[in-house]
Structures are given as C-alpha cells and as structure tokens.
Length: 261
Image 1: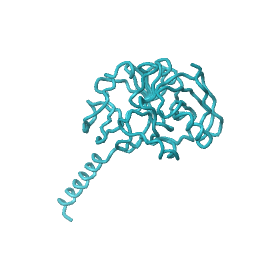
Image 2: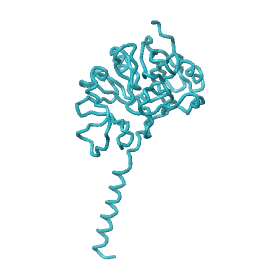
Image 3: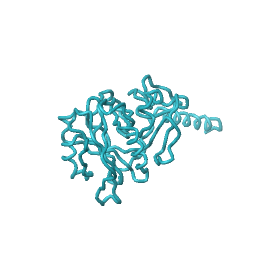
Image 4: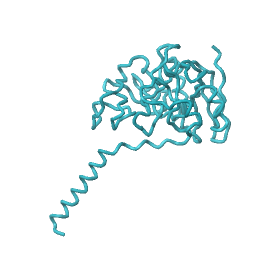
C-alpha cells in the first residue's frame, strides 16, 4: 500500500469514528442498584390521584441492616394529576396494567425507586450540601424535547455543543420553586417520551401540585440536602400507600409513618 493511501485511510477511519460519536447519545451514568442504598427519602400519598402526601428520611448502616427513621415526617405535594409508575431502580410492578406508566407531559410524578444524584440552586452551593451541585444561570436548562440528544439532561445552553432542542425548562426563570432542589434520576436511560426533568424542590404552597416533581417547604428541602450523602447512594422511594404496603417486604423498603397534620 502506498505512503499516500495509508494516511488517507487513517483519516477516513478517524472521521467515521468522530461522526459516530457525535451521533450516538451519551450513555447513562452507572447508577448503583437499590440494594446498595443506605439513605432514602420516602414519600407516600393516599392514592394514585392524590396531590398531597408525606415524606420521611430513613437510613441504614449496611445493605442487610434495618432502616431507621431520621427526624419527623413532613408534608409534600406531587404531580397535579397524581402519580404513575416511573422508570427507576425497581422492577416493573404487577399493577402496571391498571396504572399507566409515566409519560412526558402527563402532570404525574413517577412512582417507584429513583436515585438522587445531584443538587441545584439559584445561589452558590450551600456549605452543608454534599451532593454534586449546579448553580443555576440564565443559560441553565433542563431539556424536555423528546427528539433531542440532550433529553432529560440539565445543560448550559451557552456551552453545549449540539443545540438540537425546541423545548426546555429555563430553570433560573422558574423562580423561588427552583431556588433549591435535587435531581431525581427518573428515566435515567433517557428513553424518548418516558418523562424528564423530575426534581425534589421548593413548593408553591401545600395544596398546589407540580408538573411531575415532588415539592415541599424550603426548610424541608434544606433538611433533605443536609441529609443526603452521595457515598450512601441515596434514593427517593415514592408511591401511593396501598402500593407501598404491597411492595414493602418484597423490595425491602423502610416502614413509613403517618404524618400528623
């Protein structure tokens, strides 16, 4: 083979490789299974259509140890249309024929078990926060366009290379509700239409449901952030009370306690 053909062949293969990398969606970050989680935020509601619910923090010393409650329960709100089974660290429940799976724009919060991977806020990272943190800027967006390669990712509009979305949440513009929050790794494989941009964040009030997130008072979000330790693989476990009872033993879930309103 001539000396000219070899460099051309190399450049051709290099171009093919670069093209393939730009076309291939980024692989989801590996998330440990629920069996390795030592911290949990547990949320329960009365039924699939309920907006109001209760949350409580739990921890355990090892994967084989019993869950122990940390602090008192506190009120939360979920999606304005209640909940639907989501895509997370749990197996596909048997009642998905009766209860639909969550889809993009359905106004439902995901039910199941989900990793809590990072935090965000309108200001600098709080000294007490251990999770990786994103300080929101005007260019910070969470992409909810199902056709985008950045679907279900928080990105900086000014820094991302491939700007291919037509729909997103301008997070800083949301205001006080996104002053502080935690990213919920629902649909972490980023399947188109499976639901995106799910957070635990500050609520508007104790009665108004969200577009699909879980929300609570600012002081409770701070409490959650003080509690969460990425080294302990924290998760959000949420579902209606009846379903929670159904899967509590099978999935080795903490034992929730009722909220004293």
